[in-house]
Amino acid sequence: ITRYDLVYMNFTANGFAMYRDLLIVRYILRRKAKITIHIHESKLEKIKSPLVQRSLKKVNIILINQGQLEDLKAIYPQCVVVKNALPDYYDNHFEHITKDQGKLRLLYMSNISIPKGSALLQKLAEEIHRESLDVSLTICGGILDETSSGSIHEITEKYSFVDYKGPVNDRDQKMELYRNHDFLLFRSDENYEVYPLVYIESLMSGLPVITTKQTISEQIVSNDSGIHLQNENLELTLNEMLQGHSLTILSGNARSKYANEYNFEDFINKIKQTIYGA
Image 1 (tube, helix red, strand yellow):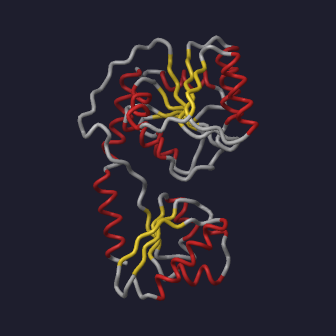
Image 2: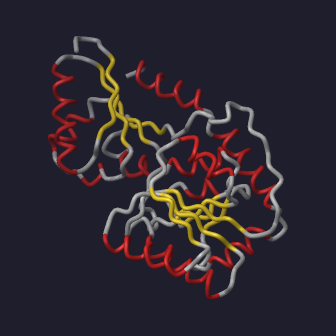
Image 3: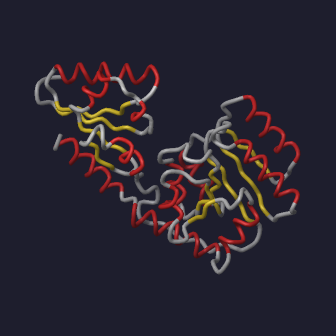
């Protein structure tokens, strides 16, 4: 790295990795290069170290949601927000599917842990059984703790409508799962997530989102492309979502939101503008 180089790096804002990344930043600054860091977590505002703050005030900072900006702008006024985006898997040739209003197919696509809502998944599975809802539940993701492992094992053993597929790493397989379901079910604890990419993948695939409240979930579910879970009650939530809307219309709303708000080329251009303007 030499003087006037432009450097872009993801920066971890907590734990030991934060000090590792801070050492890298300070080395780059000593080399007189211009640096832009991209921060995905929302924990930087909790770090009061004068050394950290002095160092990071000398770099450009990209955040991914407005909540982060509100937390950090008083300390780091140079922050800018560039919300997440993903390239279109369908290459702008998305084919809308007419969906039957029969059994509703719910998809959970995330790692599984206590803060990511494993207990709530179990509760919703029990509700589906208790209320005899015409719903299937596909769960995809690695299990991160023993409590969650017990929850997933219990509901897959008890209920035939639950299908646990484990981690899905193949992109084509993942996107096919999105296309073959009716709703994404997102269960993380309130405001635990910053900007989940599964939201964007889901909208891209025409899959409306049922979610707990997150920092950016309001913009995800607006314009009838999803809904917040109502009182942890799945039947109530589905009834409200489907009142006056067919699955086909909801799917079109989700895809339109992706097409209108998550242009990947715009995302890359904004990143480049921030780096070159650093």
